[in-house]
Amino acid sequence: MGSQEQIFSLLPRHIRKIVQAKIASPFVLPKTKDGFLNMDSTVSPFGTVGTDEMYNIVPDSETKTLKKELSAFSKTNSNQISIGNGSDELFDLLIRTFCNPHEDKILCFSTGNQRVIHHAKMNAVEVDELTLQGDFELPVFDIKRAITKETKVIFVENPNQITGKCFSNFDIIDLATGFDGIVVIDESAIDYAANKSLISMINLCSNVVIIQNFCRAWGLSGLPVGVAYAQPSIITILNLLKPPFSVNIMAQRMAIKAMYVTDQKDRIVQKTIEERAKVKAALEQLPNVNKVHDSETNTLLIEVINVAETIAYLRNEEQIYVFDASSISGLENCIRITIGLGIQNMRLVKALKNMPAKTSKGYIFWRKMGKTLRKASMYLGIFKKIFGAGS
Image (cartoon, rainbow, N blue to C red; front, side, top):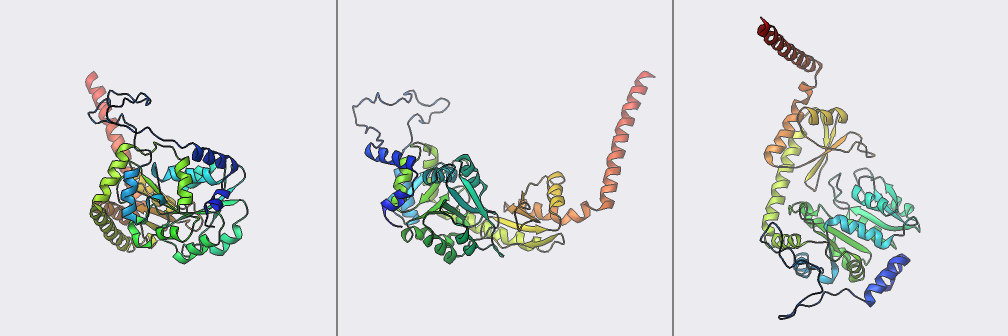
């Protein structure tokens, strides 16, 4: 699959009509010139309420400056890039672009991104979920057997959001080259394993789309910027279909500024990796932790002795929230934590270290007894005040 015509043939009939219409009558903003009065735009000329900043002008619908910077940063061409309002918009756009509602299917994995499943359901597209093999490897043969004529898109998280591991490059390439639909590789967490990025695949496989964003190490979760890399045959279609002003002015500016100081992002990544190693080593010494899986992201998957008790203890006693992975097949006793600042990481380690003592029957008994005595003392004080006041 390599030509524009072959990619075009994958589009549902109603999407094909929209694309053809947009190609025939492209949306073009009027070019502004000195002395011209633009009475076409509906924006207010009175500036922005509440600030001296000027946000009353619509953002660059083609994100040209951001694409130029991303092109240099990622060593790709601008026509291989589409920008969205976070990766969520791009997931939704890809499903709507290539899948017929109530007819087509997407294929993903049980440890995969739940946002993808959400967008599939929102677009009335059926989801086939497969379980990862042994050491969280892609079940390539199972995937090939599961592919049907209705399978239009395969989503692969690399690194995986739950396990924190990257898949074998060979397995992903084998999957992409043997599939006639679209393969979407979600690299949202690739900042922590940049050498494992498969962005170069877009020059080899015309059906591959790489998704990245600025949410993790770049720290721009509050100003979402998602990036899709693919061959121009796919990018052209996505750019025609996506909302023109979905990426706001500030998000575009901050993403560009962030790329000017990539060394700061690299230091954050390195610090996170160092903290991850410290936390992993500390957790492996605890008796209530069975295993800490290796990770290539800013998370750790931890197998504990009693997952329900651990989650309840951390939340209720230590005010620490963790991700419950126990409902996922093969991860029945697992929680996932996100690596934070040093003091935050040590707080978690200390909490898990103290858990056996704080959940023992003797500790619970005396704690309940203490609460009972404090309540009795409080009521006694109230009675004394009442009767003392009346005497």
